[in-house]
Structure formats: C-alpha cells, structure tokens
Amino acid sequence: MAEVHVIGQIMGATGFSESSLFCKWGVHTGAAWKLLSGIREGQTQVDTPQVGDMAYWSHPIDLHFATKGLQGWPRLHLQVWSQDSFGRCQLAGYGFCHVPSSPGTHQLTCPTWRPLGSWREQLARAFVGGGPQLLHGDTIYSGADRYRLHTAAGGTVHLEIGLLLRHFDRYGVEC
Figure (tube, rainbow, N blue to C red):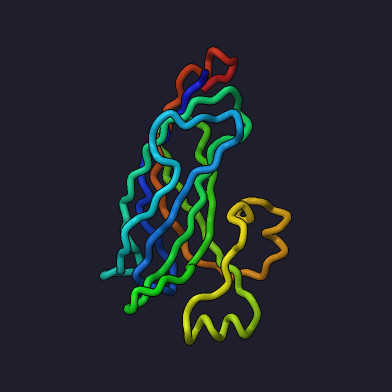
C-alpha cells in the first residue's frame, strides 16, 4: 500500500474580530485510507493576540496514512472559536483545505466563514453570545448545502504542512 506522512503545524490565525481564539481541527479521508499512526482530530490552546491580530498556536499535526487509491485524499477541517472573559465559547469560523498532493513543505492559508442566521440571531450574538452553528460538520466541504447558507467571512488560519509520499511509484503515480 502507498503511504502518506503529514507532518506540520497549525501556526495560528489572523483577521478575526474576536480575541482569545482556539481551533478545533480534524482530518477527513475516503474509505480507501487507513490511519496508521497519529490522531485524527485535536484542539489548540487559547491565545489572545498581544501585538497585532495574529493568534499563535503552533499546534503539531503528525499523521501517517496508508491508502489503496487516490480517491478521498485527506482534507483538514477547522473550527475557530473565541472565548470570552466568563469562559463562554462561541463560533468564529469554519474552514477546510485539502492536504497538498506533492511532497515537500507547504504554507497553507485557510479562509473561514460562519453562518449568519436571522437578524434576531445576529442581535443575540452581539449582546448575549452564541449564534448559529452547523448541525452537520460535513456541510463545511459539501458544496451543494454550503452555498445555500447566508454567511459572514471570518479570518484566516495559517498552516505549515510537510508531506512525505512512499511507494506511490509501485502504483504508477509519479511524485
């Protein structure tokens, strides 16, 4: 079986109006992919930007996959949350990006968005906190459902991903 090593980190985020940000992340793959080592999902620590608007997380990602085919190539899904002074958390943005398919080190930027909801929900979000969230996480990267939503742009998550490919030449894939 061909193997893919994904090694890197979630560097941080910029452009969010909220402070005290953290990120929940996960990796989705197709049925032909098997996780050999590493964890499929995680969460960063909370960081409040002191200078500028960059929240630094430097959260490691280390995954090792085996695959029988290229369908269902790994993709990272991200949820950025903010925490207020009372410890309440509210969604700041959803985003996803495909893991690059060429070996080497890659700098990725992942734009995020959040559902707006009705004007009442927007007013409640401004004064009370909370706000609308997706019921099904796969809506983040399924085009048909996502494009019917009314959304607001969030910030950008910055990632640094290193990719190692092994035994792809045995299956006729040139790297």
